[in-house]
Image (cartoon, rainbow, N blue to C red):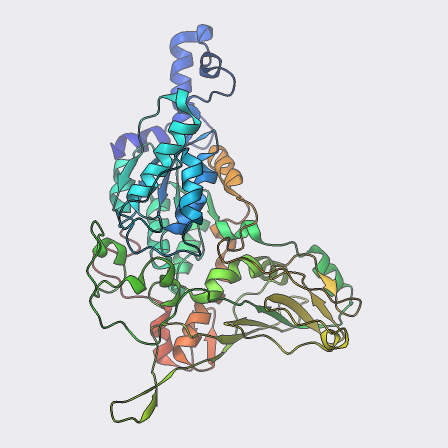
Length: 520
């Protein structure tokens, strides 16, 4: 079946040596029936879109955020979600930002006010709930289309082999699986839209971005859709309103999930229907524990990307593009630590290179590029903030718990939000900022429409993987510096830390056999 799919894609006829499934089928139909053929949209009535004209999408990752974003994709009339995938089958041990909001959203979406999750009947999540949401939405919203049920897979590798008519995937898996899933799809010429980060290892992220640059397959990193516009800020900077730009500061109150100072030692049972081996994917084997999974995976170096990967993509990607920030020479971490007592009552500092700290700042020093002088980017999380500018004291306004500012040698540009929105010159006024709610992340509006249009037209869209390397480089070096616990000197051309051999081990992962990124 895979060979058949490839034959259809490579049929001649569009000038590029390739022909999509819809165009191929349409050409055969026209040749067979001539001008007497009646378009399917006429037979189906107003608004009807023939199955052959729809984009077939598989949804990989049915955790809480995956389920929360799924209805926006289902609502597109020219999209058919044909398959869902998750290694956890039943809704057990999922966590969310509230006890009932996600469940109530699903009830409303599928038109079943008494729907329950199954499992332990608390927070929705897992493969069964993903399939129920897809099938329930189509039955409720498109009752006349006689759609067959979507197929469910535990293993994305099986999905990519069996779903031979697949046009695209949306990847909502945990961070450590992003790179291998994206690469597996792109190698099969399947378009990819994915949540941040590209990967939670530097070398893996570079491989994905490089492959996207060599390939014509459309890609899209979802965080781009929430980025602000840098035009006004760059006009002020280039016009000298703040003098020479010296520093960019961005601070978040994240993490808003539990983080752990010690590895778990208890052995809770594996939930029914949870394929732990598939969930681990490329990462090293270990015993199951719920603190590794679902919401809390973000805090582990092996599975997540920490607060900067979680939120920095939303706020900083456009900043990286506008200022052409790439290849920092120095990465300087400052981080919290945890102490404990030994059995003999002596105190000690926990040596922790397995979870992100509760709070930190990381300074990236970027060299001169073109007409831009050297600039420092400083990230803060866990309640850390830059020094309060004098104007906030003078106007008796509290410095916000989240925000962004651009500091020059003659002035400061502030953002009214954590994201780059509603900027203003601090010398003229002081404003309170808008806090991003935990449940929504920073997503302003879905860019899934642009992505689907790109899949249809075989074109790249804003926020593609091709544009994502500089921010991918930074969020991964953030994690490496925190693990090393020291200032790192970095050779960007060689992707190598020059002053700490141990830190180079954190740039990549040792893949489990069969999970190598270039083989999956």
